[in-house]
Amino acid sequence: MEKICPSTEPEKKQHKGLTVHQFIIRLFLIAVGVMLEAVALEVFLVPNRIIDGGVVGISIMLAHLSGWALGLFLVLINLPFFLIGYKQMGKTFTITSIGGVALLAILTALFSPIPRFTDDLLLAAVFGGIIMGIGVGLVIRNGGSSDGTEILAVLLNEKTPFSVGEVVMFMNIFILGSAGFVFGWNFAMYSLIAYFVAFKMIDITTTGLESSKAVWIISDYHEEIGDALNDRLGRGVTYLNGEGAYTGNDKNVIFTVISRLEEAKVKNIVDSIDKHAFLAISDIHDVKGGRFKKRSIH
Picture 1 (tube, rainbow, N blue to C red):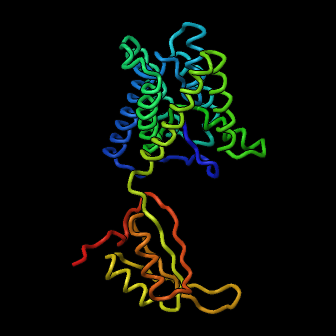
Picture 2: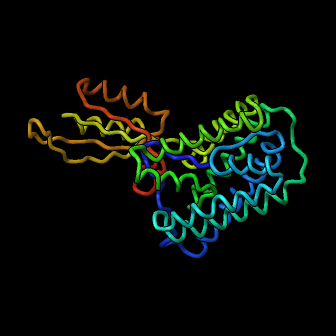
Picture 3: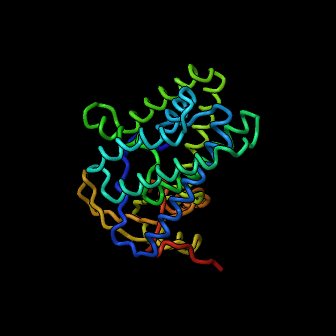
């Protein structure tokens, strides 16, 4: 299963500039992610006739109908997509992804004899989705992929009016719907639960639990607001120079990064100093560097 935001295409993950040590760590984490995917498939999902989206879902149905090994279809279906998408995704991404798919095929074969963990379909869907989402998230976060659906979506996006996210959504609706004809509609609905859980876990794994927020404030009292944010929240602020497009007047913009728990406090601080201030707050991820780390307040 691969997750793509509707408005963005998958980024080309590059290992350029990484040290050998960092690159080895990334490969190790990708391997851990693939192992978790294999556990989710062979211990929770496949034995209970629950599928995932993307190439994995297609492979599960084909393996069930043909009686052949799941790993065989994972490789046969994914490999053409990775090779075709070589130019779009880059050499390192392609090689890493092919290696990940090959490892997934091997691990599913090794884990296949393991008895199912539970016969409860709801538990299998939820926990299988959680483990699958964490595994896929680890692979994506470290610059790999174990599903060629996103590459097909990128190629179709260039020839159709639909975004990458819309193409992925249409394909997964078709795949999950097909499970109703192959396994029965009850299993298809449990598959939808597993897909949704995995989708959310990919979000958490790739972006982290601690979601930060970026804050922009435009006010004539920018110094007072900046000092208050610094003193009362312990947050460093940056003053940016701006210009109003309509009036042509110079504007002072305050920029800072806060945690989601501090959002209400920021609004109160700004409102107490300037009720007419412009305030914009948005979610951001992967804050790194700079002086945005919260200092202790005494």
